Length: 361
Image (cartoon, rainbow, N blue to C red; front, side, top):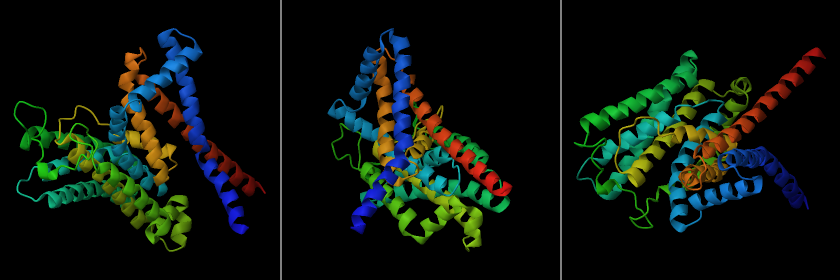
């Protein structure tokens, strides 16, 4: 009796947590239809049909498209998880983009080493990506904990450092002549493409799914996760309870960076197979912000959120075939973020009013 009662209470609570995310996605798609109406000069119904059919055709319509959607989804799971870990600690690790790039660079450097057995080589590539990403994130984490510098500013600057450092190695030490890339990594460093070489989907997808479960376990089944969440909920109360704020800031940033760096390493070992010159950011880290926000920093929710944004990113090319500007997919993402950000603003205003009411009493 008590068990069924708990189940009835838990379900609405779960739905309530993600109701804003679902509402934001629906509204974003609804608003985007009006822009399609302008672009196509058609009615609402016809424009909606064209938009949704083109998104479906470009992401899930065929087997090859669905597989490629999973390719786009895989790095977003890693960057979404990286942001979720930081968010849970009350931190804004905007440097996930740079940590992902550093992970790619390190994976390429290790992947180019000849004569290493396959299994060992793959392990070294992944560990190298994790370690470099963790170190890259721990630096602004340490500065935040030690002298109180703003992690947003520091991580943004380190994004640019990471990009230019990657280009230095790509176009300098490991440069392949007559190209804007390094030499391809050794075959012993390649992740298995389990659907064949004709498709880019690799075992990195399974690593991403397993990692999402592990992060969930970390958050809710371990002491480390409890301390991280406690610092994020109320740092002063956590410190009063004997939890070190400084230690958990550095630890959370390092774990976040390790996840992002692992994503970068898997992207190299499973998809790209070499580093290329970057004329701008790959944007996996920045898209990860939206992924984590929509998922409400829930590790399992990140999987489905990453699938959504992976589908939108891939289908942007198909939209143009239907006469729809590909920026519509970016518009959808922007509106979703706007609505979710508004929720946090309303919560902050509500809490502020409650505090003022208590003080006035």
